[in-house]
Length: 169
Image (cartoon, rainbow, N blue to C red; front, side, top):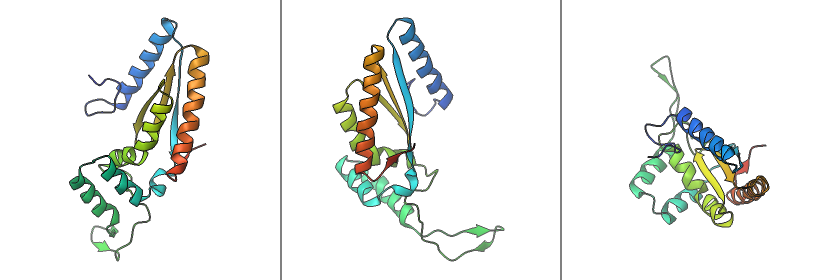
């Protein structure tokens, strides 16, 4: 089962409660844990579509889905009011639309190289991601868990900066 994942059938509450229980168990058995939720600042405004498409090709994302997504991302928008009045086509300023059915997949594509590098460099870090929210967690002795979190946050921030993204402060 995927109790600790944002997958179909799991609510955000179920995932959050599972994480709390998991951390409670770690505390009961004497294995300190620490964690934090990190937000990517202005995520939807700063995605580079060329990098996103390159990541899709590099990581073998289904090209048919990416082609449809790119068509949606690049297409002009029409704004409708009163059910019948429509504006002239407007070119989107944001590369990815908030709430697009594939926005989480696109977010993961945009950050995949950074997260992969993070987990290779800091193998004791645990990450989960939902669109622009990344949860970092670590277990071990209190000192080890804290050191893991500091290192993981630094690696994550540096990697995202290379992608033109920044951590919200």
